[in-house]
Structure formats: C-alpha cells, structure tokens
Image (cartoon, rainbow, N blue to C red; front, side):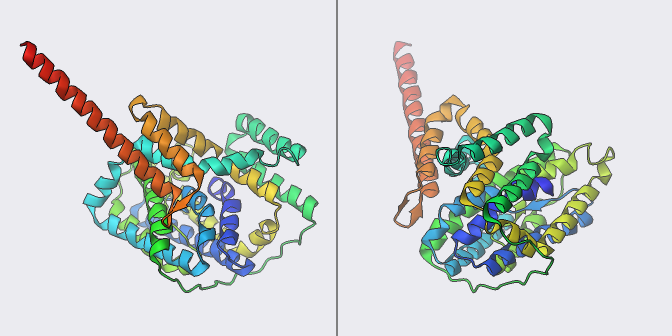
Amino acid sequence: MIVGYSSAVVLIIDLAKQSGASPDMVTSWLLALGMGMGLSGIFYSWITKMPVVTAWSTPGAAFLLGSVSEYSLPECIGAFVLCALLSLITAQSTYLLNLIKKIPTPLSNGLLAGILLPICFNIFTHAGTSPGLVALFLTVYFIGKRMFQRYVMLALLVLSVAVSTLLTNGPIPTLALPTPVWIMPEFSLSAFVGLAVPLYLITTLSQNLPGIAIHHAHGYYPNHKPILTGVAVLQAALAPLGGFTFNLAAITAALCMSEDADTEKSERYKAALAAGIGYLLLGLLASSVVVLFVNMPQEVIHLMAGLALLPTLESALSKALTPEKFRTPALATILCCASGFTLFTLTSPVWGLLLGVILLFVQYEQKKKGADCKRDTVSKKV
C-alpha cells in the first residue's frame, strides 16, 4: 500500500489540477481511486483466494499529465469512460488481447520510456534556482535505495510534506470525510483518439499484461477475464468521480506474492486483503491528503514525481534498447513520444507508437528482401 500510494499520489494530484479540477474535485479523485482499488482488491482476492491487487495506472497518469490541458475536464472524464469501454471489449475478446500482446515488448517499453522522460527530466529543472533542494532529494533517494529500498518513497513523501510545510506555511490537515463530486462526461472524437486510445494502450501494455505475467510467474492462475471485466466496469462507473483508470497491479502485487508475505502460498491472498483495506482507509482520508499536497511547491512536485518514476524509466529504457534488432524503431518511438507534440488532435505517444510499428515493418521487409535475394543467388549458383 505504501509503495503503491506514495510513489504516485503527487502525480495524481497534479494530474487532477492540470485537468481543471477544483480542490473538492481533487479530493473526489483520490476518494474514487482509493475506493476502487480497495473494493476490487478485497473482492477478487477473497473470491479467488489468491493475491489480486489492483492499482491506478501510474504510466497512464504520466501520459495524461502532458495531454489533459488540451481538453476540457468533461472531455477528459468522457475519455476515461471510453478507455474503460475499450478495456471491457478487450477483456471479452481473446483475439484482441492476443493482438495487443503481439506489439513487440521493445516498442511498448519505448512508448512508456518516451512518456516518462519529460517527467524525469524535471528532477533537474530547478537545479539552477534551488540547488540545495535538488541535492537534498537526490541524496535521500540514492542513500535510501541502498539502505532502505522498500521505504525510500515513503521517506521522500515525508520529506516532501516537511519541506512544503516549511516553504509555504500551509494549512494543517484535519480529519473530515471527503465528498464525491460528479462530473458529467462529454464525448468527442479528438479526446477519444488523443486521450482514451493511448491511455487504454498504455494501461494494457504496461499494467494489465505485466500483472497477468506476475501472477503466472508466482504460480497463480486466476481466471483473468472476469477480473479485467470487473475492473473495466468499475472504471466506467467511477470515472465521473475521478477514477481515471483501474488495472492489475504488478510491483505491488509481487510484494503480496513473495515469501515475505507468507511462507504458505495459499495464505498470501491475505496480504492483498490488507492492502485493499489500506487503500479504502486512504480513500476516506482523501481530504487530509489533498490538504497536505495541493499547495505543494512545483519544485517539490517535480522532484517527487520524477524520482518516483525513475526506476520505471530505467527498466523501460533497458527493455526498449537492449534487443539490437528493435533498437532503431524503439529509439524513434522514445524520441517521438518524449517530444510532446500534437498533430491532427493525435498526441505524440500515438504518433510514436505508429512510427515505431512502421519502421519495424520497413526493417522486416528489407530483411525479407535481402533473404530472398540471397536465396536467388544460391539457386543460380546451384
């Protein structure tokens, strides 16, 4: 729960603000996300007796952070609903799921790396104006990675709150139940193509597919079709309240599946139940969380979000550029996605993935033509 929440809560609050949400709406977002993750995790872990952890899509939030400002808040909500419908269709179709699986891993990781790069660049954006602050966060991060890796993001979260309190002299949070705020969705073709489709692809490729793989790697084989169906329906229902996306967790799920959770494999689902209860409590404490973070200085937000996503970026870059035959298409995908441009209402991640697929196809055709020429030469010699 700590790993899942502390690594991206600043990102989610910043995303809500960028989309045009008021402070009450920001609270509603965290309430909807906490309730959705908590209830779904508890329900599916209980009925399957396996650790099923759900999460918001941090890579999806990173993508949205650079794109939502071009659309109105109702259009963004409408895109979240349409994204849920795409996920629902995929959950019902084995053909679509297999088709998405055919997207080469280097390209999907190139897409993810390109989205994360601008956010991670922000770690050093304020080095010229606030060198002490940047040095402090980097020191805590790198020492924490060596000394207390599991709690490094919690340490940075505490540091962020402390620094923000000193810099802004902000209000002290009080205990109060949050109020859900309903935003009527608006549906537009531009938001569907520019927000819903990329969010759907990013969530499927970087969250749901790895989530399935994590289950299998630990020897758990739940029927994922009803789980993915239920999560998609939950997203469609909670999107107007700010539940922008729900999906299978990967890293936090792995924590609940290891021997650290329980030496008895059949009992590890209880760790997922505990995480779900924790998410419910954090959802109910959304008002206090927003008070702590909504007035956080931009420098602190940039440092916290960038450092939280640094391990994900490192992993994505490694997987994107390691296979030599995919290196050029993957690199083009990374650079195009990171550029942040919009053309014909399509955002750079859409163009980046399309460019990577085209280059991969051209590369494949060139190799095929070369192989055919070589075969003809050998035939003539014979």
